[in-house]
Image (cartoon, rainbow, N blue to C red; front, side, top):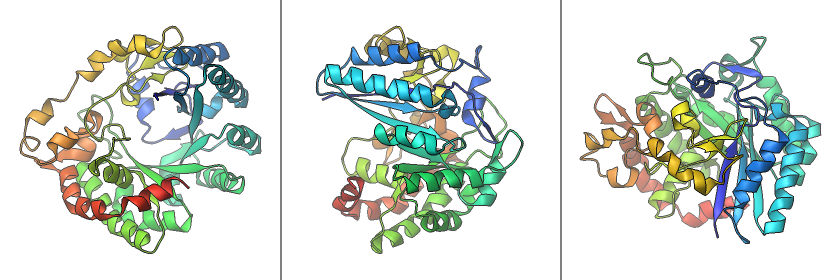
Length: 373
């Protein structure tokens, strides 16, 4: 059984927020065409049709919606596309799954029937406690958005819509492992992903928001015992990095992009159907063509410039003598200065030294049983 995933940016880089650290706003400034516009229903339909050309009965497919802010495409767009994908997949014997990453600003009761009918997994961007969130995630009027996002969180919970929280781990937020974990516990968050805040592309000057490798290490090294304490008390909370490491170093197939340092083609679609191999590299030189014109397999070979670029650092110290190199291969090349190296030290390797022995002792059935709930 094959599983094909495609990420769609139905509103291109358009957004109703002005986050201080937005990596996609940085990316589109480096393109000849920054805004590809709102995706038409015709383009969306062609993307689904071409996906299905590479799939057979019994296969599965996932459509993930991201931005910018994808909900700006409107409820009608989602109603049409999700139903179209469901119907077209049924004809071919392919099951579609759906996921939506949103800032939560315009989620309302009107969205609930669509999210529930098509079993859309929601990723809600929320940067922890009010002060930190409002400092970084403001609207067009330069006002904090914490209250409105928390209202969306409460709405999803009230309507039993499955969701997880995506917290951007800035250099400032990474100082506060305990406060972050207390927020997670207080707000009853069961699934959380800490997304490392990236620096700007091609800039020699490091953003004050960009996570440094040492701060990355200190955040997770302090978070791990808090996570373990909750687990020992019978409260499993999914922290994506810990789950990914337990699965990968436990001998399973990695389900996190970059954790094993081998780039794969993600098929990320802009508003006009133009497709790129990675969300972090949606630049003109890496455009593979259009998924509105060709099926994924026909575009795969055009990803070679991306797959071949930028991994010379694994031929140097500290990678050469590192005991994890054969497993991590240097990790995600976009996060080299965020998670890995500084001052001659690989802080990722140091974190693995600290937590991996304990992590691998955790009974895998505990993690697996929680994921099935």
